[in-house]
Image 1: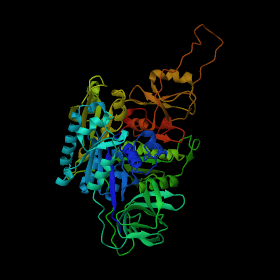
Image 2 (image 1 turned 45 degrees about the vertical axis):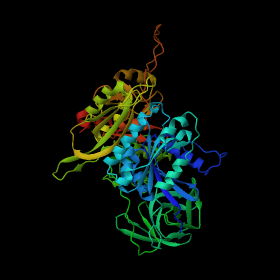
Image 3 (image 1 turned 60 degrees about the vertical axis):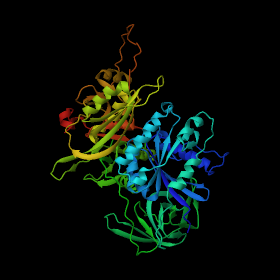
Image 4 (image 1 turned 30 degrees about the vertical axis):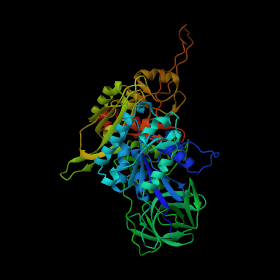
Length: 628
């Protein structure tokens, strides 16, 4: 049995360069030949990941360093996808902690590092982007190292973990060094660098996998994939024994009601990771991260064993959800015209499929047969799921994200509190502070970031403790206040007593009062009432939201009104007038904007908003009647 293995994951905040680092690790390890085309950010394989520039799903790859195989798992950098992070921590024995040399450790760094330290993993600190102008004098790099050390102590790292090795890197340029004094010569091209120091540190610092002495095969399912040829693929780390093609094994999982389930099946194929590819091999050995096929019912958290007598491994546990969202079949008058108007059975199947693949999501039935509730971590996580379903051709509706409360031991109502970390130009700090304090946010930290004269604006970092309710709909206001220059991230801190009422949207909606097609003349007359969301020539129906009213109550309007024709002409009668401005409502904007009495209608072609009650004579326009 070979133990020439290392299993390591990469921990980093969004945009700190981990996917770029993996690109260069693959290239310099010889996994790809120099003449071979390698896409940038090759680990971000999904369309949504490439479009948004974020990692959503954890992925596996491997490189050969001498005669040692190093399995590398790329983990998401956004707190909403923490479920992806938590389930792969059991697959690895150490981690590369990637920290931006100018920004320092940020919320997701803290969140994932805590998971890694609690597992007892050894950490290698990689200070990336040392080529940034703010780091030219080296002082900021030392500050970031000290801040990271403080974070280790704060998270309860033991003495061995706190004595972490440090690598200084410019992943974009494909080099790193363990010697701080070599940074300047490498930046000035006086020396030529590679990633060899990092490869050497991985072999020296990250321990080989610890495997059980038992001969029986045992593997915890940490991820799932699918092949058109062999069906569902089960991904995980082999903790003991080995497995071969055509071997009889047992799946130990759970029935829908939560009772234990044991199911025998035959392994149809066995794969391992060679670079980015899954390569078929005759046998998987203990310590390796591999893939087996042969069972369509496998779920994340199951244990695969060669003997029915072996007890299952502890199931993967993730942080509890903090938000809930209703999914419904599409009941609008335009249903079925732009996509597949799915029935409740198909919507239920699709949501259950997502929950099986994503352990951070949960599924609940509700009293209404055509609606279902999904529990999750954040607005972005919901937005990604909605966008994926939309691209699959489905039509459906979603409601406003709602916070999940808890009840304390003394009967008090508890709500999730989040730590929001903001990085923004100093000139906007007062406006942003006011916005967050209106949402019951408490400023806990105000830090001036390093700044080089003549390069960009002076930036500051603010930290607020704020209820999760207060963060709903705040992102667009924050970006507007910072002219798009602000960075925003958050993580759940604790559950605390309810902070009181928080204003959401103080304005009402402009609602179409009939079915038809919007006309420019009608929209021109409505402009003074508020902000429009639709252009001329758009199909509308009674109850559809076409804009935001300037006042707090809703207003039913006619967007289909045509100009009356007349024989009388005047010199100024036909002056060309155009609409002054229309707000483009993206899916995320809609999620932030809607109230509890409204739906978002999602189709492959459009995202619309509507009232839950379409008929004008069955709903009130008064805010106090509709928002209770």
